[in-house]
Image (cartoon, rainbow, N blue to C red; front, side):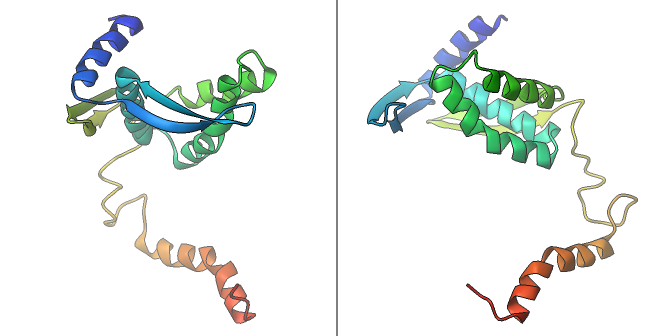
Length: 165
């Protein structure tokens, strides 16, 4: 199915379930606020499915970088800077980061809600053998104690110096 046909199909299917209706107040480029009411049922389904696949296939730090850049990328596109060098630079980063994001996501659409029922990918970073916190070759429980101590070191020093806020 072509991307256009897929979107049209999802618009009908998700629209019948009341998905993708957005009522918001936006900050326009010129400084005024404007109310926007949008319907994007198919886009909402694709967004949820894509995020579900990203959660399975992208590393935590890559997801953090993505999250920190989303608003800048959106602002550039919204304000008409599609052909700007900064948007193109961000696009190169996004394209590289998205390479492993492929697979299958199963969703349920019901009364305005989208529920992820399952996801699978050949590029999955999830392996239940390592996610159990049981003894294995990847995760040693005793490592957590040292990590927690180091992670909290700055807070312990602050408390020792009597600086709480």
